[in-house]
Amino acid sequence: MTAPRVLDLYSCAGGAGWGYWLAGFEVDGCDIADRPRYPFPYHRGDALEYLAHLITTGDIDRYTLVHASPPCQAGCALTVGTNRSQGWGGSHTDLVAPTRELLDRTGLPYVIEQPNGRARIRKDVSLCGVMFGLKVFRHRNFELGNWSTVKPVHVKHDGYVRGHRHGVYRDGPYVAAYGKGGGKATVPEMQAAMGITWTDVHEELTEAIPPAYTRWIGTAFLTARQEVLA
Image (cartoon, rainbow, N blue to C red; front, side, top):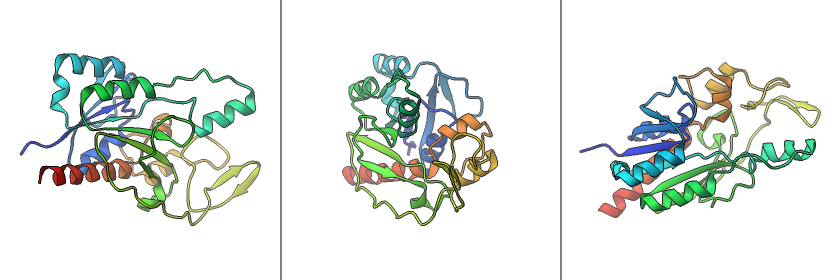
């Protein structure tokens, strides 16, 4: 039996892709930046252009599922707060809507991932590291297109994130996997907290999805798919 295959758009270093691989998928990535540490085959280029090309040629049909993590810095809670405090405008890229438009054209089941904030996606599933025993909060929301699953219960946080926040330092069992200084996690701490070992690039780790999230998503999708086929 042929393994299901997922197209991992805006793939960054492969946190999402690795989770789908753990769930049983073959993985192909696409990212506009050079990602030599990406652990699967990938196309370097604009994700929207590549997806449009796959639709036009019919090559999209080799995929079972499409995952997309489009940049939406204008809607990210951390970025919005920083911009407001500095008096900056909202000129950041927001590719959520055009990505969804193309994903709908594929006719395939899909997943759109975004952090907490103002990004305009449905929060069909919301996950955080505490739900998987990870030492990082990293809340992420997922819009599910052309399929559905039961929304899991968000586990109560049982401690603080280590570091300074609003001028106050707190110690705690969780690490801040973003930024530098002020008690923020080191690269080895971020790797351990998120279960990512194949890259030690700080920028890639700060943007990464813990693989446990997409392993859960991928498993839920395959379960739902099997129920439909049964």
